[in-house]
Length: 262
Picture 1: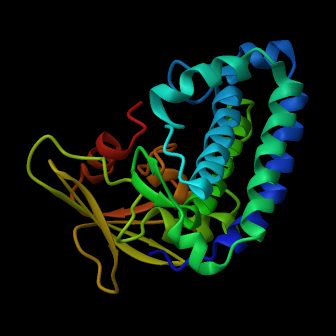
Picture 2 (picture 1 turned 135 degrees about the horizontal axis):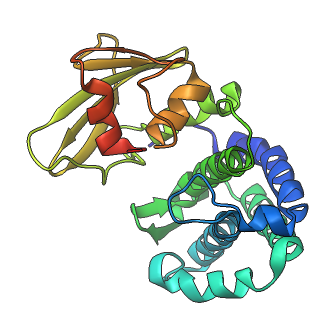
């Protein structure tokens, strides 16, 4: 189980949601039609997606509380995404804020034991309400970064947020990237930042991660804000501010697994 505090995650979520939804509400028709940094997605698609993620995680939390196993992700979420899309930027902003506030209120009434006991199926596997709190922060934080990047901003994820979510994303027992795999053989990388070091092992069966003190394989170093967006597949590591040691093609091979490939 991740040592990250879900209540701290929700405290960090509140300003992220406000910044995200305030910008979504101000999107102009021209901005909505722009291509986003995510392949084949417009800014509209991006804004609808992050709103639907907030909706799905809220449904997951509320259903976990009562033992309702009705799916909230994947194909089950497509009708909700279509409904959300029809409400427009102001509707997306209001709904995203409302979903996050509902989660915060629900979690405030739970004990630490209940946060771990109540669970719900996610595409990554069975996950607790405790996990969903930080997954929501991660989704909102990175998609706010996506929105800013799509509209011309350049820079890392906020450094404090990157340092906070990296241990969550690279948790040994519930890694966010377990489904990433190679076509054959295995790859080993060590990610190094101010917040720690993690060994990532990628095989045809999937990806595992663990904290380490001694680097193994190719080493990728950067500040937490940059390293987090790289491992999330948003930027390549073959340029400053990253430092890569290992084979000459290490950055290319890392991008082939985690992205982006362009």
